Image (cartoon, rainbow, N blue to C red):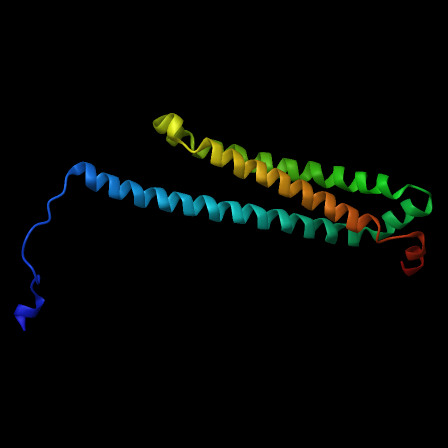
Amino acid sequence: QLAALRHPAPGVTVETVEERLRTLGAMEASYLDLFVVLGGLGLVLGAAGMALVILRGVEERRGEFALLGAVGVPWRQRVRLLAGEYGVLAAAGVVCGMLPALVAIQPAARALGAQLPWLAMGAVAAGLAGCLAVCVWGAARAAAGRFDPASLREL
């Protein structure tokens, strides 16, 4: 019974420090890549959630938009009003999220310098901005056309 608990093959595996660090570095890089992908996915889902918030907010203010349509405000101008209103909100959210993120990566940026994946981080930020712009504009277009002057009777 005690023989079964011992190490099955006694011996030592010898490898250089360089090989061991390369193996650990590859594992660390794969984890970091995974977190970049998951973070980007989270940002895209957050942008889609922003579109839902816009639709919900407009639904609660349907009387205002029906009145704007009743007094002759064109559909395009209502879309611009909504997109501007929620675009400022989305831009403020992006800035409020990126500033702490830049502060958080500052020690790594100082230590690694040019080795930090600036291009990938910039691509994620640009993708977020583009996704937010599409979501805000699409939600504003969908919401602005839903309430015509006839919907004033429902209120």
